[in-house]
Length: 163
Length: 417
Image (cartoon, rainbow over all chains, first blue to last red):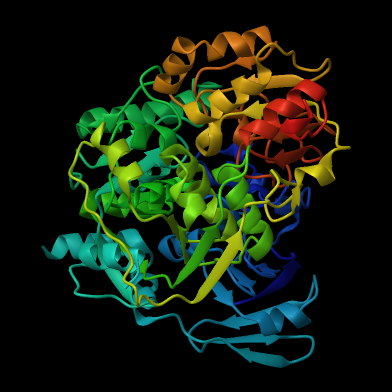
């Protein structure tokens, strides 16, 4: 995938990703409409399908709300690249099939509006303006199984089905 | 092994586990609330799953936007209610019979020492206060667990926090955890287990220990935990629905890092906007005027907290121009506060007293802030817009500072009044 960067800093919390006042719905479209609105008003209307969020340390800290990765994905974001992820957000992204990558190198060089190309299979991120390539270590095998199944529920359904 | 590793090993059917290892662990209790459970239920049903793994081990607690604040919230609770009926979920409770989940589950003995608990709520780590492994997960994790009774976990490395010295006056579990987060930062324990011990911890009652473990997630931790002792056993013996299993760390257990702090001279702690790591002693916050004070939440809405607040508010009035909102965390806390005359103290002080709800903590209802307003709160997060308008501010503290500050209208050391 190739997309334009939206750049954020460290400790982007789940209240920034989707404010709690909108959690009285589970509708993905409604959640997406309010994605990041307190830090970047109008964010969801500016995003084009395939764009990429690039952020600093501890992305997604705070609450367990899965509404956060749902809002991001349905806003059109194809992938989140951060220096590191908060653990519940990390789980939620893996479980729901939102592509995420820990790649501090590209976070340091990419600026908002830059093109970034992500090759998940090869484990590689390319910063297009400079041509710099950053390797990304693969997830542990156990997580790749969940990712390959298309998320945790598909994985579980297979396991339950085998019984 | 550490206590965390031992509990995970037992639930994964292993002799031992090591940090970094992946396991599928058996879950004792799985929890969801009116925000996270509807998503989990949708996932469960979309996957075509028909039966839950064990209707006695699932807890669905409507507490965040309840009593339902609007039509959409009412619809969410309706989804939970209908699912609970269909699957005969034992621990589903209507408003009027429950309260804030992390106060309610321990109080009712639904969680006990040695348990492995997952909750689709980040503050599930609260139950570490009982010597359980408890961690927050997402709705899909909850959905999968409702079907299988299992959860995937990466075994966390442990960090040890030893609090030496005797607890000074006014200092509680909240001050210890704010102090800790101030020292290590909001990602200082990311993916880690935080194990708390030492003389000051031994002196804390179970409710204070819950305030402490509740905010382990605010340092990024997977869980916070305190080894069970006589205080734990006495608490559990009065209410536990199942037999506790007692674990403690081995003398040669491995810790990634160890911290030792003498807290005998610690001041009450306050976290300034907009991260829980922006911690200062209360003396450095004295000039800060406030519009609202909230005493409640899964962090500090228990009877211990209300007793402390009432001891300061008795015979005093909330400052003019300031709103004090007191929210007992459960029906039982509310009733006990009524019996002890605490509710009367709050009303005499001109406080608003609400039925149990998470409400204002997450800017849901019952105390949402306007632009430019500032709230001092015994809650757990002070992110941008957490309690309302994106240009409002939240300061975090324990119940003593909250009550004293409500009286003066600015952040105040309880000794000052």
